[in-house]
Figure 1 (cartoon, rainbow, N blue to C red):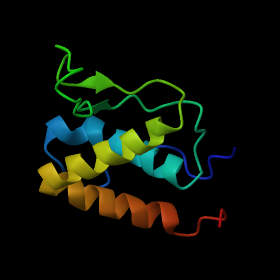
Figure 2: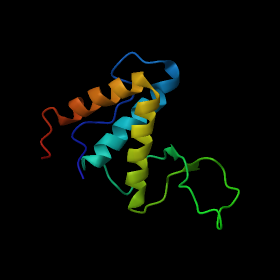
Figure 3: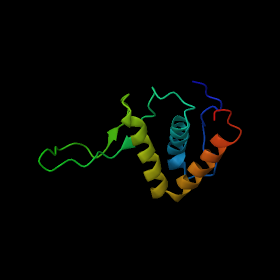
Length: 109
């Protein structure tokens, strides 16, 4: 798999310092969604666990780290990116700009 555009090391827009790491992770997720980044290496985003039926619910932590190599990890990364974009307007704008950047002149159809 070729990385035609290297991953970002900093946000494209001026962001609150606390969102810089999430902006870089979001670009990696965008590259994975588009097939421009290896899907065997999860980004390692934190996601909320799926609600469990009350009969089998356990006392687990409120978030888990997505690092497994299963097909659902990309879906969890997408959910993370969307929820972060909804929660932080600045990051939403950053994600939009990153999608435009990744689509622009990308030889990978």
